[in-house]
Image (cartoon, rainbow, N blue to C red; front, side, top):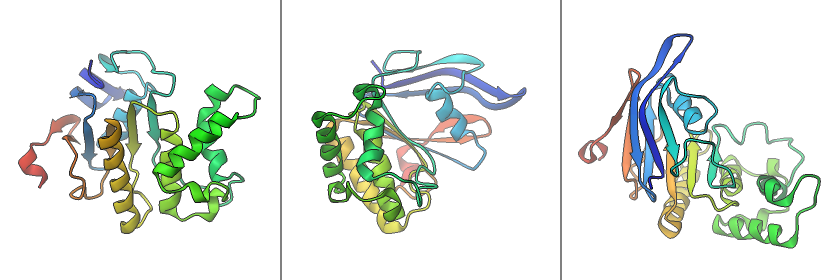
Length: 225
């Protein structure tokens, strides 16, 4: 079973083609990067993968299913996920716990096991000592790690990141890449990352794709150096 399979996918907005005959295949444990100029269709492709949009033709399967995957198997870090956090009235712990709402239950309080899950994921990202801090008190890079912890707390099989380096400094980018490589290696996590930033420091990338002129190209290894 593939982690992700896209076959002959077309998509248009008001008859304006955005994606044409898109084909992509990722195996479990792949670390894939998606690049392309602004307006090339990267966000649209992610929305199709996440079932927020439906293709005009073709199909997309995640973990063998064409339906929306539930149960925390997909972790998603949205673009500008830290935007507006400056005055947001929640602690780091509360932000991460919020992604366990399906396990906790509506209008119920988290149990000890849920708080342990939060502590464990924050430990992996070296952020547990900040769990009682207000999210707005942290730097942009630290907030991005909290957004990553929020996505990872459900122990997903696939992690999708949309421009995760936006708005953070070079030191924080390097720390983020190190964390992603460790998660990929230690958990055999399938990662799909959209980025404009340099990826030369990431050694475990297995595939790189570029969207251009409505088409998806897989770049060869020698092009990536």
